[in-house]
Amino acid sequence: MVFRLPRTATAPFCPSEVTGSVAIPAGLPLHRKLLRYAGPGLLVSVGYMDPGNWATDIEAGSRFGYGLLFVVLLASIAAMLLQTLCVRLGLVAQKDLAQLCRERYSPAVNRFLWAGAELAIIACDLAEVLGGALALHLLFGVSIPVGIGITAFDTVLVLGLQGAGFRRVEAIVLALVATIAGCFAVELFFSQPVWPEVAMGFVPSLERLQQPGALYLAIGIVGATVMPHNLYLHSSIVQTRKVDGAGGDAGRREAIRFCTLDAVISLSLALLVNAAIMVLAASAFHGHGRQDVAEIADAYQLIEPLVGSALAAALFGIALLASGQSSTFTGTIAGQVVMEGFLNLKIPCWQRRLITRVLALVPALVGVWWLGDDGVGRMLVLSQVVLSFQLPFAMWPLLRFTEDRALMGPFASGPLVRALAWALFGVITAANVWLVGSVGAG
Image (cartoon, rainbow, N blue to C red; front, side, top):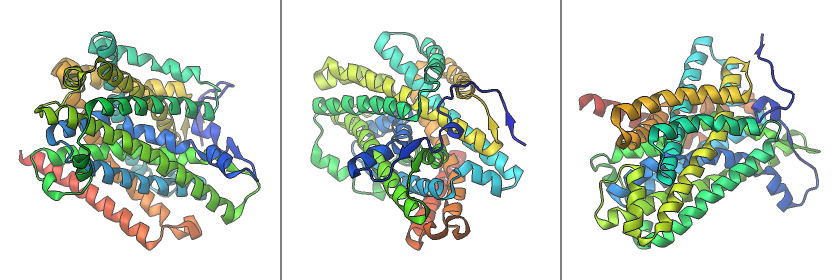
């Protein structure tokens, strides 16, 4: 039995409303076909450059210079691997990860996985609330609590997109991502990084992770980069692409090929943005002897005197605001995917947005009241560590389903992909266990 709440005639961008909504006509030229397939990867990549990423990247760049750039690189490659598995699962099984979990696992296991996915979405939304409030504070001088209150009204943005269509949402997100990327391109020009040292930072080093606090930040970077709810999201929204005139395995292979390319290109853009944030922090702060910058607000205040340009600070605030708003859309869709998939429960997207935002507002306000404005950075980093803890619980079913030949047929993961994916699962799980043990010992 499916429990359905009343829905309006003009459907918002919810997963059940948009499956197969973007047609790919047969015989399209290659460049037009690429544009048709482009989009789902971009929506997923937004979660990889949200304010939570800023907090971990800024603190890592300030404390360790360019030394942890390799963590950003490896985390992004891991994200590409997992998101391409999501592409394959959604296009072949024609069901998203949450739906398959509901079908194949017991009710108790489903409730556990659903609760973990919801916690991850709330943690991500907490970062968006704090980042948006901080951007409003920096740009317009409103207090952090007032800024948090203003972010509650972003539900109006979701209402404004009722019936707008999935491609319209993708276009808006593209504009916001382009704003973020453009701002940081100018920031890097002002900060003048030492590019040979930047290149060395991308070389993996276990020695750098042994520095005090480095592993904690590295886990936060992984959690901020490989977001667990993005695995549910991508396996759903990739089904918006409908290939006309190409059925069977040939049609699936084409769809997988183009959607994988979309994901890799989009996540490569996210990698560049995250690396740019860390490089900016390393060159502007660490390079000037300021290794104590852990707050986004401090970074904003220090960029102008250290870099020597008022425009740099303004662009920093604008990019932060765009980052929080772009994540609003994907957070809404991810919440809907998780709720529909695990619980078979459908509610209007604006209601889903309101629920998620209220659940994020409470800890944000309590945290600011308890820790003060200076605690925003700590809460942002902590939210990303929470995401890292939830990641293995989303990875396990994804890896199990994509290697299942009964479900995936000839598209099941091969030996090399399985080995890499399970090795990644082991590394992330071990890092989380280590962190719990170190915190408990401390």
